[in-house]
Image (cartoon, rainbow, N blue to C red):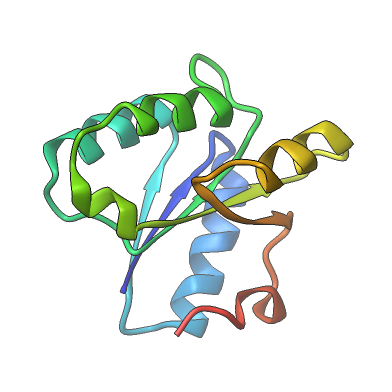
Length: 121
């Protein structure tokens, strides 16, 4: 299983990466500090993730802009990727927007905790 963490906060990435290593030691976690780099990697179609945990509030390209760019990629294998918003946002609009997105499987409030990852196998 490959998991991508897309978040501009280095400390958050470090903590979430440690959690992933502890909970899923045999799996691969990849960190992107810039959503644009994640889109570039997805565009290549190589080493696609099984799961993406996506922050909303990031500079240059935020989570919503990432999803817009994601929707324009033309690789049928991308449909297999499960995307979860992972955010500290308390804006109800962000939650409702994520619920109504065809690409988002769920909204998880930061920080990640083992019990919030029970759906990963």
